[in-house]
Structure formats: C-alpha cells, structure tokens
Image (cartoon, rainbow, N blue to C red; front, side, top):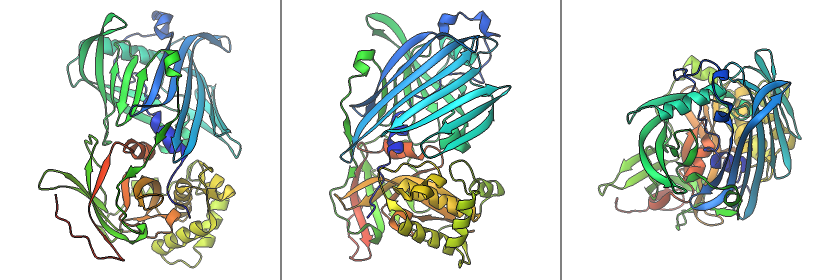
Length: 505
C-alpha cells in the first residue's frame, strides 16, 4: 500500500531555490540608458557554489558568462550547470541540469534565446525559447509529451542586473528595499500561475571581512515574503552571492574543485519515537515544536498554533470536520477551476473521465468522494513515476502522492469544482513512527474548503496531516522542515483507544 511521498521533484526544486534567485533590478531607477554605455566585462565571469542541506553536501552549481554571438548579433552567453545527489529513504535521487541564456548587447540587453536540458533518473526534459518578433515560442519536450506556449518578451535583461549592482554600491539605510523581477521559462510549465513574480530584497546591513586575505565589504539581504522562512544571503557589492540560506538549505561560494566534491547525503524524516497507532484513526494531535527558528508557522481550518504556559510552541491538529464558512470570490473560483498546462481539466480525456466517475453524483462532496475512490483503486502506487501533467498521470496510471493529488485537482476542476494541491507532512507508523513528506488536495464544497487524501483513500484527512502550503512553492516549505524541526507528542486521541491525558507543558 502507498505510504508517503518520495517525489524527486520536491527534493530537487527545494534544494535549488537559492541557485535560481534573481539578482536583477526591474523597478529600480535606470542608471545606464543603453547597454553600449556599459563595459562588457561587467557581465563576464565564472562562479561556483556548493549546495548543502544543513551541513551535508548535496550538490553543486556552476555559472559562467562570456562574450558570444547569437544569429550574428553580439551577445552575452550565460551558462548554468547543476548536479544534485541525495539518498532519500534508502534510494539515491540524482539530477543534472544545464541551461544557456543569450542576452543582447544592444538596447537594454534583453533575452534573445533560452534552452535547458534536465536529466533525472535517465528521463530527459528539454525547454527551448525562441524569440520571434516581440514574443517567445517556448517548447517543452519529454519522453511522454511536447507542450508549446507563446508568451510576451520577458522584462529580464542585462541592464537590470547592472542597476542592481549599482544599487548595492550606493548609500543605503537598514530597511531600504529593492524590487526585482524574476522570470523562469520552466515555471511556465511547472507553475503556470506564477510565471511572473515580483520580489523585494531588504537591506539588513554590512560587515567588513577578509576573503582570501583581501579586505572586503559584505552586505546582508533578506527576501521579503510571507513564507515562515525568511531567505537570507551574504552578497558582495557587485551582486555576487557568497552565502545564502533558507531554513536548512544553504548555497555557499566555493572554488570549482571543492564545489564538485560530492558524497550523497541522507535525508531523513521527522521521527517522534512514539507509536500513535493507525494514521486513519487519529482524531486529535498536540505536538510541541522545537529545533528550528520559525517566524511564521502556517495554520488553517484544521490546525492552529498555541503557546503553552511555559512558553513552548504547540501545534494543534484535528481530523477534517466542518469549519467556518468561506465563500470564494469570483476571482478565486475562477483561479481554482482554471485549466492549465499542468491540470489540463479541459482536455477531452480528463473531462470524459470526470463525468464518467461522477455520473451518479448530486453534489460536490459526493463527486469528490467518487474521484478519491476511483484514484485509489485505479492508480498504481509508484515512487519512480514522476509525471508533471494530468494527461501523463492518466496515461501511466502510476505515481506517488503528488500524482494522486494532481489528478484529483484536474478531475475536480473538470467538473467546475474548485480544487488545489496541498503540501506538508503526514504521520505514519511504518517503517517507524515519523512524519513524512506528503501531498494531498482540497476541494471547495460551496461553503468551505475540505481536505481529501486520494493516495490514502481518505475523504476527510486524519489529524496526522500537517499543512505547510498551498499554491506557491509548496515543495519548498515541506523540505525546509525535514531534520531540523523536532516534534514532541504532548497528547493525541484516536478512534481505537482512550484519549491520552497529559498535562500541558
């Protein structure tokens, strides 16, 4: 029987969140009017970084920029290479990614071309973005599908990078901010609703130090965002990152030889050392949290945070039940019923299957129940299947919890039932009592959000499901709490035993 998430994509995208952080100003005052007024050597160089999960090396990241030509136009060629290896639940997970971006040396230095290749467990995925007029034709290819999109030309350009470095060099006060614009061609397919994202960097101060015997000023910045981890980085005035950290994830500047020294590290679950019985029977759970600096822990209709009399942080979890009524706005209803390149709820095979499964349904609740039961019966649990679209899941009929959740959302949306994926942790007693990475879903029944877990055949999820995120980068929040965060069971209640009676601490 399917247990918990071991999805490779979750691990990979979490580890590399810092590697892809943009350092390019989009809304800052333009300092140089055109690229021809900036020396080309401002954009030429080579950097290497080690990637760490806590103190364990899990990969490396190389970036190099040089003068080049693209279709007879003078350009800057920016290349990136990432290698990642980790042992997860006893199995080695690996990924290698290479990408190249060509920037024009005219006007503002806009993107001329982008291409990438990712190899994950011998599965190859490529993305190419070709400029045609003022638009890009972006095509993603894998062994199972080919998707093409047309988008407007991104604002990302070399002049923005130069503006950012000038802002870093200029006089600042603590608390000053710089708004940047990030664009990712891969997000067009993995996160279609987040292809344009404005980020705000906050200046926290500076310190003088020595690097390789040379006196250097190092600036400290944080990324202003709502996540309960605040990304922090140490950066040189020219924009080069020395070190970055988000929770337990670290990127650190190293020489290339050191960066490439890699022995796969083991990533573990959060152990609790206490058997809580069958997960499906958990009705109530109180956990004491410790071991990780958390600025904001997420809450929802099933979970809340309390402080004990001794000042300890307690996480209170309940089995899914009726909660406060939440009526969706027209905008949210449209957002959570939308078909896109991931959920594909308007595709013929998805629409027909959704209608077939729920032909006897008379309400969103009954439809959701029928979809959950169909998925549990017809999708084969498989860690090695890693589909990114509803059609791919339906074709293979295999997957881990991420595929179950993805297809549930797609089928629900095909019926115009608002639905979304949820990422977090789930308690399981096997192979040992612990909380494991997991993904499930929520649907809106017209009155409130309801949590369901198709991988576990749960119409109402048990109290062992810890919600971390929906929508924006759910995988990052899930990975960031592994190993560092510690749980202590303070109290719990199940269907098959008397409630534990422990004093609140």
